[in-house]
Structures are given as structure tokens and as C-alpha cells.
Image (cartoon, rainbow, N blue to C red; front, side, top):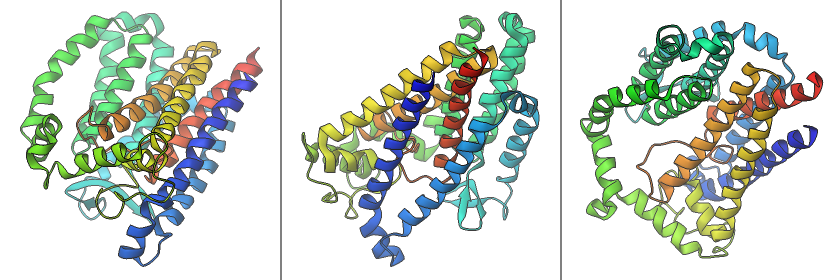
Length: 364
């Protein structure tokens, strides 16, 4: 498993380094114009990266049994933070959403912490209950109630993208852990009315859905961003226009260094650049699943599965949004987008995965 650990670390390192380069390329002109410092976003990203690397090595070196013992306290802290962020004057509000705490120079998003907490909780629950997971009352209900409570708090922020990610990862873990598919399918059917209200009865989300179907219906309004993303991706061709030579980042494509950084990569590095990223994420999933299959225990197996599923789903959703294959969700591209606490907790998740891989070697 040592080769797998090295492969995972190298894949993440390449993605992170590419992210550093592209964040500076995508944000320098905007930062110079608005912050009078072309390196403003790059310096902040490097600070988040430093914190994330420290936390990754901490997660990688922490005893897995200790992590299991702290499962419920960690989940309790995550829930408490999700409640606190909703309180005015405690949580920071931006663009109508209350998702962040301000801690000195760092913005902290508790929903990112909640994703890790719920994965650890689900892994522990599945490993403890084992055969009981087939029971609706004793296995499925405790899991779905806890996950539903966390998702409900995230939706109050509101943050539909993160809520969907938590739900999908949770259901994948439960299904692999032994929950009957009929229970999950029934839950999906029961959630359809709620999804309808969230998507079509909330004005800005309804506009997003309509623009997803026809971006050119409002090309200067809500469809502007995705059209500019199409232009960026289409302009790159096979080899791209050259690193730093993007035109769409010149105040045309909003969020070019965050949610739509994949579009700038496509414009500057072309199809070869975007294909390389897709290949790197595919390799991450391949190597990560090796860890999951060879994990020494059920807890480690489920935790590895959760980490790999989360990273894969977020990458698929982000790339799908920038390519117009999915409605806009506001999820960053893991390891590459400028995203603050998102980068920190993605690196923590990788640390947990590397911890399991290391444990595979010691248990043999």
C-alpha cells in the first residue's frame, strides 16, 4: 500500500500546485483592480493551503481508534457550528447566504466541517451496527435522522450544493454498508416534493434551472456566467491560448478563480489541460478505491469510501456545471479552486484516506 499512498499524495500535490498557478492567473488582474494587490487571492490561498497541509498531516498521523472515539463529539461540534452560523452578528452574511465565520484573516465555513463529521459518523455507525443496517428501524432510521438533521441545517444557510453532496455521499455509504436499496429509493421519492419546492419555488434557483435549459434566454442576465464559461472552454481549442492569456477572466467570467476556474483552465491550457485534470481525478478515485477495498476494518472501509465519493462527486458537479451539463450549484473544484475552508477540509479528508492506507500496512 506504500505505492498507493505515494500515488495519492502525488496526485493531490499536482492538483494543488496546478490550483495555485491557475488561481493567480485567473485572479491577478481582478485583484489588482479591486484590491490594489494582484497577489491578494494567491496569498490568502497559500495561507489556507498551509493550514490545510498541517491539518492533513495531523489527520494522517492520528490513531484511527481515537478518531472513532471522538465521532459523536465531533458531530456535536459540527451541528453546534451549523446552528451558530445562522445567528445574526455571529455568522457572516454574503449575497443573501449566512454560511461563514470570520476568524482573523480566515473565513471558516462550518458546512465543510460538517461533511467530514457526517462521514466519520456514518462510517462508525455502519461499522457498529453491521447486520442491523438491513433493519429499517435499528439501522436505517438512526442514520437518516442524523444525516437529515445536518442537511436541514445546511439548507437553512442556504447551501443546496453542499446539502446534495452530503446526501449523495451518505446514501452511497449506507448502500455499500448494507442498507436495502428500497429504503434509499423510498427516501428519494419522499424528498421529491421538497426538491421541487427548493428548485422551483425559490426565485433564484428557479432562474438557474430555466437558464440551465436555455442559457441564451437571458444572455445578459442570469445566463451571462454560463455563456462566458462556454466561450472560455470553446476558445481554448486543443492546446489553449497560453497560460495567463485568458480573455474571459478580464471581468467577463464571474467567479473565474473559484467555481469556474475549470473554464479558465480550458481556455488557457485547452483540451489537454482539462483532460489532464479529469484523468488526475479518475486516478485519485482508482487509487482511493484500492484503499477502500484493502482497508483492515469496516470503519476504515466506509470512511475511505466516503472520502473518495465526496471528492469524486464534487469534481463531477463542478466540471458538469462549467460545461453546462448540470445546473449551477456553487461547488468549488476540489484542490484547485480558491475556496478557503473547502481546501482545508479536502486536505483533511485526504489525510484520513492516507491514514487508512498506512493502517493497511501496519495491520498486515
